[in-house]
Every structure is written in structure tokens, then in C-alpha cells.
Image (cartoon, rainbow, N blue to C red; front, side, top):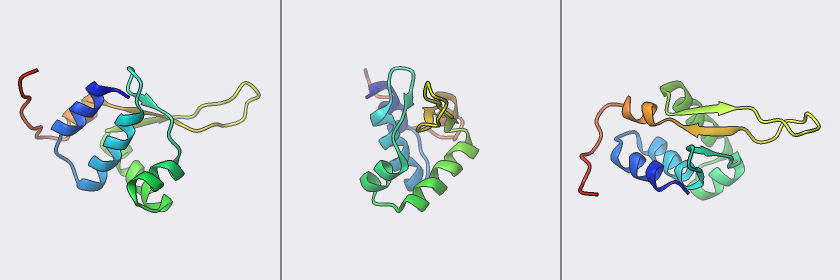
Length: 102
């Protein structure tokens, strides 16, 4: 879990479905803000259907909040995509809530 990513998502104003998905992704992020959760897991944890999760992720990608990369196994088979949360994309959404004392 990346506390930095979670805190940045908390400060960013965005539509509730995007914010929930960003929080779930941030909870899985490593220090490079990269994570590998599957759509089924995100659906189970968010309460959205898999189809809704795919739509939300696509919207977030179009907004620049996330970036997806295809991962291949050593044998060349596709694995889960890597999803990167973008600090720049979060900041670019507009208003962020003021940072408190740290």
C-alpha cells in the first residue's frame, strides 16, 4: 500500500465512482504507484459489476488518472495489466483539498 498515493487520492476531488476506484487502486499500489488488481477483485471490493469497473477504469485512463501496461509472463502469455496511478493526472483533475499539517 502506498500511503502517499492514498493521501493524494483523498485530497483530489473527482466523481465518486472514480474516487472509490482510485482509493482501491491506491491501496494496492507499491512505492512506484503501480498495482496489479484484477477486475473481479475491484468489482467485489467496490460493489460495482465487472462491466462497470471496466468502464470506470477506461474513463480514468482517458482522464489521465491511470495508465495501463500489458504484462507478459516468461512464456509470453498475457497476465494482469499493470495499472499506474498518475500523481500528475490526479493533480490535473482540478481542485484538490488543502493539505493539512504533515
